[in-house]
Amino acid sequence: MRLVLAEDHALLRAGMIQLLEANGFTLLHAAVDEPSLVEALRDPDAEAAVVDVRLPPGQSDEGLRAAIAVRTARPGFPVMVISQYVEHLYARELLASGDGAVGYLLKDRVSDVAEFVDGVRRVAAGATVLDPEVVAAVMARRRDEPLDRLTQREREVLALMAEGRANAAIATRLVVTEKAVAKHINSIFTKLDLSAADDDHKRVRAVLAWLRV
Image (cartoon, rainbow, N blue to C red; front, side, top):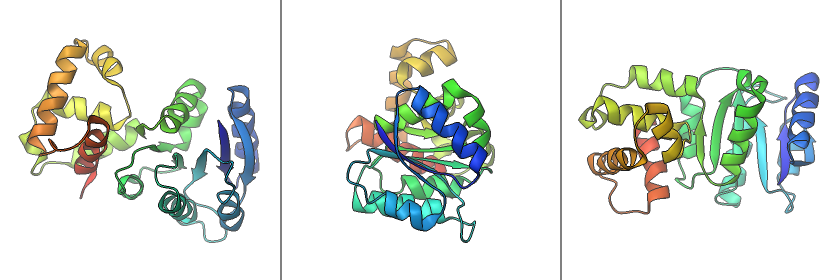
């Protein structure tokens, strides 16, 4: 997998390059600001990107905007966005196309090598991966329709879906069978009126419904 990386902090950038290359990724470009990221994302050989939300010159949402732009130009292009803070609106903007293959992780998660690398791989494979802290923050504040149609167990399943967990991983986490997880997911789709799409697309739409403010 050939990646574009965008991170302006030299030590973190060097560490991420070493980490990703040690786990089988090829780093095509290591951008340090918005202009170099925009240029790197034009490379047709790039297959995915890992991008910091805040980059020079403005240190606001330059990385996020570049990520959204490349996904507009190349629908479904896998992007993992990393951020210092929990900001679920960024995750919602990334998911807005409904194409999947997006992730939002906190920078602290990079120190957990196995989890970070697994997240990048899942995003590259087309999954939606949200940081557990983002999931917890959003879940704590959501108390409205249509999500109040869901049972507590269904909300737990949806939260794990938002983290990008496959059915088998959800079953292991909740100590239930995969058949039970599939039943809960079908119920979630029905209650959120998501019956007219393929399962992968419905999973993204369900997470979008959960993120909406």
